[in-house]
Image (cartoon, rainbow, N blue to C red; front, top):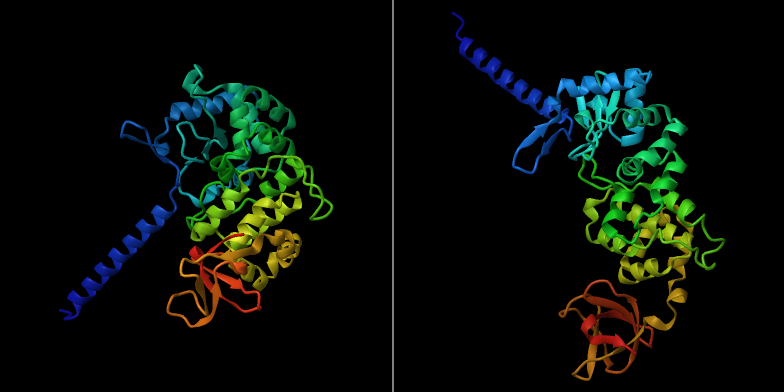
Length: 377
């Protein structure tokens, strides 16, 4: 008998367990992320278990309209382009495209997208002609189908832009932007970022932001100091910039995205939000300089001439109950004192980020003073 047999058996068992664990992890990773939903009464529904009757009824409805079902390659390609979901990554035959009571659902076996209406009295909440027009537009970019969808189901149609970020059809984008509340920070954030990616980060939809400039503002101004364009597309931008800067790990390429949004605001003459953001976070300018402003020319001009844009507002005065305050070398109370500055004397604020502000005295000396000792003139 082989004396090493027990060790061999143990090795095989260990490898087998490891392989099973790896397979389980891979299977978990390849499952559609939006198929399992909570149903409000503490129950769950898995779209993997969607009734075959519903699937077949949807397919039959399309057949009744002589719908041309696409091949699997075109079907996958269009879903990726429109919804940003690669259904080929998942082992599921049914793929819900978002978390919702009635989401859009890709039926791989039948090559169509199931859409239902919770307010409909139709069988299985499926309105056959809406289902037909929807698939015609999504798969074949049919303009007539889009016109019908805009009239028959505007909310379903607008969600292609507002929720999924699909912006290939500019007529659809214009339709979605009409009456959209750009002043609602939550809605605006969802519009320009959508849902988090696989790394649990928000990715800026630069194409949508470009569309706001072109559709809402009718393009950019001739010069940075030209009269501001009419429009409300960036009404929430200031809040978005602050949100991003405070939660940088939540955003992919955060600094680059902030720079891009600042550039877009400057493009339409909306200087105020950018000015406020940069003044509160002047340390950000160094990051921009290090990265050549990420190619944003107007932002570069703005930052290099910030003093001109700010005017005399950077001038503050010292206000200390002791009659003077210390100008320090670093941002703490134990740092070397460079100079004593009397209360009432004017200083120029160079960086007001954090609790210790970088200032320049009337003698040209630079150092840090706690913000509590500085006030407006």
